[in-house]
Amino acid sequence: MKVFFDTEFTGLHQNTTLISIGFIAETGETFYAEFTDYESSQVDDWIKENVIANLLLGRPDTSYPVGIPKPADETVKGYTRNVIVNDLKDWLYKIADKYLSHDGKMEVWSDCLSYDWVLLCEPFGGALHIPECLYYIPFDLATLFKAKDIDPDISREKFAFGEVYAEMLTQKHNALWDAKVIKACYEKLVNP
Image (tube, rainbow, N blue to C red; front, side):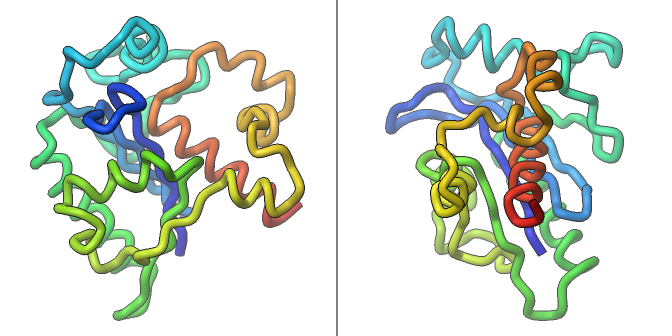
């Protein structure tokens, strides 16, 4: 069982804080949450224009950014870190209970793990405290691209959906949308 995830955060620096997190299981179930307690003083203009503008909380259904559908199977959550961590843990165990044997582990996949994996582990108290249903070794799409002799800097949307559709995606950097793109790229890479 695989789960694909992405995070959005306040910048590429050591003290960055989570803005949102999105997961999609290989079976299609999703989890998406927006943090209300991120460090807003760290938000620069790029993050405002490319991340904050793509948050879903408080949007009417008709005003979602292009390419970012409102999650149909989960409500959009906007809470503090502790609440989101508990909700995420519940969601992960629900998926594990539904699809895994008693001692099975889910593989965790992201785009580039440099920040995403650390930011996923940190709210749980570090990598040694992640939910037991997760495999402790994460995997990343960038390395898989490289192993398949594909430039790891390739546009994920163009690779997954083709040039025409990717051009329509004028706004990205939404954690749930990006998790769905990661899943689509993975599926295309392993089942060409």
